[in-house]
Structures are given as structure tokens and as C-alpha cells.
Image 1 (tube, helix red, strand yellow):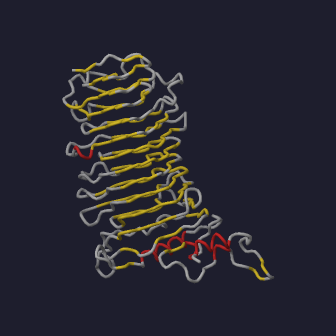
Image 2: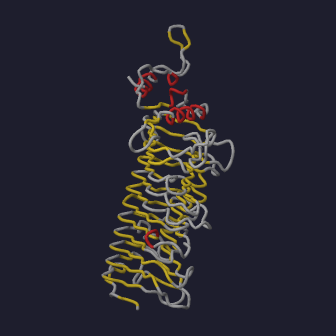
Length: 435
């Protein structure tokens, strides 16, 4: 019988510190069962407290140390742990940063003069969202639950809820560098973020960084509030970070957060959002799902790409937006998406729900397409007096819930735009193409 089963059976009928047969018993969660699974590290074996009464900082650090000490040599890498970190049901209180994994710089040298190096293949698993919960309640402000600086690759985190009680806290900071010192390939499956955060995940890198990529979120839930954003791509925008932000997938996620920004892309990136429900909840605070900041002129087209397919967006007040983009090139596509859940409300018709700025790097913007979408409110392109030299907004087979004419407006020179086979309310809109 492994430790996970011992926890489930031992916790039934025997309370923490109960007296059985006249002898004081240790808490059920403190028991260590012989013959434990040699392929796993259980935080309970290191005296973690699943009741959340006392901090489990030391227990998690000890479990992470055991995990990282279990290296096995393979043809792929000499630093692959042969164990999985297991977090059984419970609510674990963490009060100090970097308890989930140690904050060790993979590019620095250790006492022997060797590089700390990259660790390949980290797996951390709980028993499911709100079944295994880590509550991050740091005693200091402006801290991060775990930092990945040029060290951990091929990470799998699953079946966990992360709850912050300190709004200055962040979940993860990830920093990549030159080839061989990247942090790419991180997957979150059945993971939930709750509470108040500054940001969820911040991606950063040096001027030669190109390996902060291949990250995915599968059936995850993003709740709570974010004073910056849940995902920030390009924490140091002034640094020319090459094309490190590649290949991000959000698949069938439930994004239902109070306020703030879901994804803030400061540099550009190739991002895919497939399926799921995205809701901004707080009707009195601003919120935006996609905030795409100005990218420097050296940015490649291939990393200025956003694709959303089959997503249901819900905007609950006139302070909410689906997208606010300042990209000057690339592609933005919404296919079979619907943001009309509140189109019946009085605020809907005049609300700016999709905004594009074509003036921040010359008179140009990305190719924006809406294909088979249902859209509420109005869209606007900020233009100057100079005609746009690149960029276009195309509506193909879409429906405008609050309009009797086209949904697009602009501030200066007429941008390139086109309507094809669209409905304005319940009436077909005449096809139109400018110029």
C-alpha cells in the first residue's frame, strides 16, 4: 500500500492527535508507511500538514530536494528525476517563496565550479482541483511561489489549486537564456488559480533568449484578480528578447476572473486559445482578455500571431474588452467565437469591445479576421491622417448583435476593411470592401 492510499484510509475515523487504546497517536497525515512507491515523493512523508493549520514550507522544500536528488542517467539527459512529486488531498499552507521548487540558477556555477545545469522532466501532481490545494500566504510582499531561472524544462503540473491571499504575490517567474539554458515545455493540466495576485506567470529573458516557449494549459481554470495579468510575456520589454515567445496553447479552459488582464503580451508571440468559457465577472472594474502591447520593429511576423477558436466570451459591463491590440503586423484571428452573452443589456451597443491601434509603428497594423463569429458592441481602429500601409480588418460570415450597419469605426484615415456575407442584427449587410 502506498502513501497516498494510506492517507485516504488512515484519515478516516482517526482525528489528528486522537487517543487510541490509551496512547496518544500521531496525526494520521504524519504516518510514513513502509514499502512506499519508489517512483514518487509524497509531501506527507516530510510532515506536510494537509489541514492548513501550520505552514508546510519545510515539508515542501524537503520533498523537492528528494525529488531533485533522484537523478537517473539516460541517453537524453543526465539530470532527469526518476520520481514524481505527489500532493495528496488537503489544503497546504505555504508562507515563504520558492517552496514548490528551489530557486537555483541553472546558468550559475556551483561550489565545484560546474554549471548547475538544466533539470529535465519535473512532474508535480495532486488529486484534482480543490481536492489538493496550495494556499500561498507569504509573510512578505512582492514574492513569487516558484521561480524558474534557466533550470527546469519539460515540466508537468496537474490536479492542483493554487490560492493566493496576498495581492502582491505572483505564482511563477520564468527566465530563459541562450541555447541549452531555456525553460521551455511546461504543461498545466487540471490546474486552478484562485485569490488575489499581481500576476500568475511572468516570462522573461536576456537579449539572447529564445527558449521560453512550448507552454500549455489544458482544462485549467483562471479565477481571482490580477493587478498586472495572469500571463505576462516579456517582463522586461526594453530588452530585445528575440523570438522567445513561441507556441502557447490554452485548450478548453475556464477563464472566469474578477478583473485585470488575462494575457498581456509585451513583445509578441504565437498563441492559440481553443474552446472554453472566458468571463469577466466584476461589473465595476476594468478587464481585458488580450492586451497586445507595441512590439519593437525587429519582431518577426511568426511571433505576432493570436488565434482564438470556439471561445465563448462574456463581457459584463462597458469597462470590459475582448482585445486591446497595438501590434503593427502579424495575424489576429477569431473563428467561431461569441461575445454576445450580454448583448441584450443597455450598455452593450455603445461598448468598445475590440480595439486596435494602427499608429504606434507607422500607419500599419495586423491582418485581423473574424470568421463565423457573433459579436456585440462596436469595434474601433485608431488611425492617423495617413492611410494605412499594412493591416486590414475582415468580417466573414459574422453577426453583429447590436448593429444595423457595420460594426467597425475608426478615428482618422479609413483603414482597409471588408464585410462578406455578414448579418447586422437580423438583416444581411451588403458586402463591402475598402479600398
